[in-house]
Image (cartoon, rainbow, N blue to C red; front, side, top):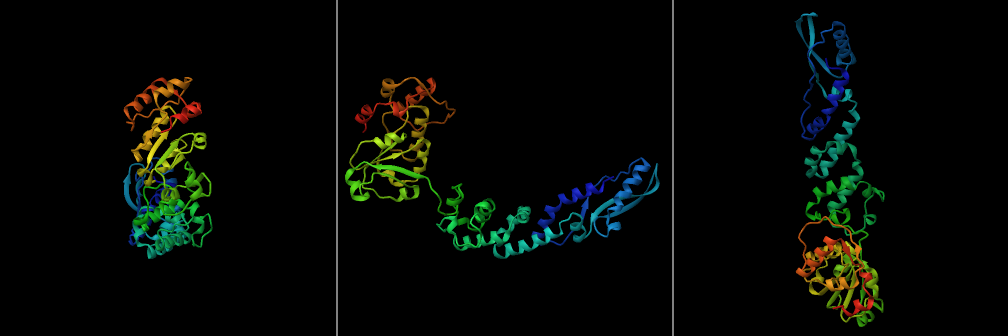
Length: 374
């Protein structure tokens, strides 16, 4: 026979469905608990189980589950009233039994507030009623109302004129993202995973470090400064009177690169070079890429070419490798995808991969490298 503990567990499991009925505006429907109707054949145990079941019922406590009986004739117990149905007939009975009266009252109040401002969240509330219960809606609604009125703030989180504490949005970014993805969907940058660019906010961006290689440009536009680091969003908009862009993996090579007319050099720092994928003006320049002579160097080159197909490699050839190789071991790779390389580059990549070799940029003599810069 089902026990009061099992009834409470099964009743609690139905709480989410009950909350969803509230969202749909449905009247309370009696909640039926399915249990084992077969009486225990041991008379003593049967009577004990039945007594326990009745003691926790509405009949004894004034609230909770209602028991319906059917009188049947049994071999061991003779004519006996057997529980055939256990149910919560009223909302009060159900909520008081599972200790959810206050929680449900707050849930009803919260969804009224939410839907009065954002009826578009009804489907989300229906799907995630427990998230409504688990979160602070006074603060969340303040955030949502601000973004509804200003969907593209272009401010830092700390600058947002919302009456919540400084860390509130950061601490609740998960639930805020879910809500704003619905409320201001047409303004959301769904391809951006980071919270701030996802919602058109400013943030501590990755920096692009570059040097001006043209002395006249350095003097006229930058007051003689040639080593510059700026946020990627500013680099995307900068207008420089140049024709050529060099990109190197090694920072020291960037710092020691010789002057060139109408040119700049960018420190790519390995796979970090992909932050430049949206710098559209690079497509109008001559681009030369110099990476390590190892499988990762060619993989970075390949990745970079998916954004800038006009990139040309230099000092990444077999002649350079054979001249200065010290048979250093490379880092193995499991990448099998097709690479965006020229036939010569691919042959070099295959050789390095199959023999697990590498030649780092800094091991190529400075004078040799300077003579072969395009």
